[in-house]
Image 1 (cartoon, rainbow, N blue to C red):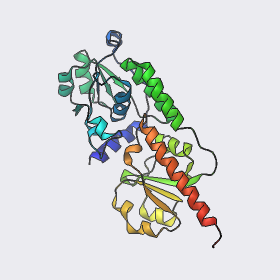
Image 2: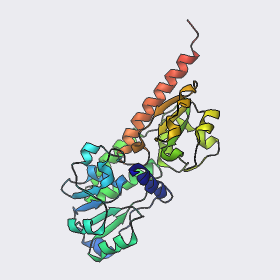
Image 3: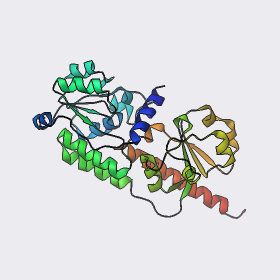
Image 4: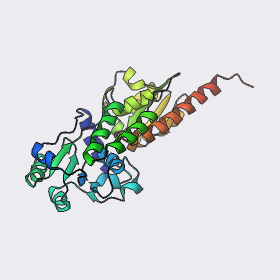
Length: 285
């Protein structure tokens, strides 16, 4: 249920990726150069863990401590305290600024701002460039623009588009759904040398893909990033022309340093698929 809850939150965020906005300009002007921060946004946790001084980051979202829900290294995440996101918990930490999603409860936002805490909202990145822009914004907020540039450079290097043959792929996510064209993971798949088999069949963001449809029209590569009964069905073992591979759900939704790990996994998969093509095309000995 934790995974489903996080996925629902993040999928909702895909509909709108916003630049950060501090709601109270007067508070923004009074923020110190290196403000103390509480992150309630699971996708911002991993970025802030790299661009902020550890002493600045008073707490991150509780999702990042859970291996079933975290998009960052859990051992690294557990170096930081966590919060469930209630106003009472945040107020007890007394941060200068809270980093949240656009879907922070209005009552919580109002309570924090009434107590003089600035609130900054970040939506879900829709692509690599959008994510890099968010990294820079978060680093500036934390007071270390140079750290943001270093992380941005690593992300850009990892996400350089590959050239050559492409592999028709379905990314089968939690809940049995597929990604749409505006999703970050779709951008990553394209940069890594894949085409969307599901989009070519008319499926869009969060459309449901049944086991029967997969079996009737299988892709060359099926990436399983969920744990639905159909995604573990023995029928998948009989798709002899399809390679079925697990894909960590923690690599699907968030940008920032998660992009580096996701691209490494996707590039390795593409290499394996091209090697498979060569082997199948080779004449029998």
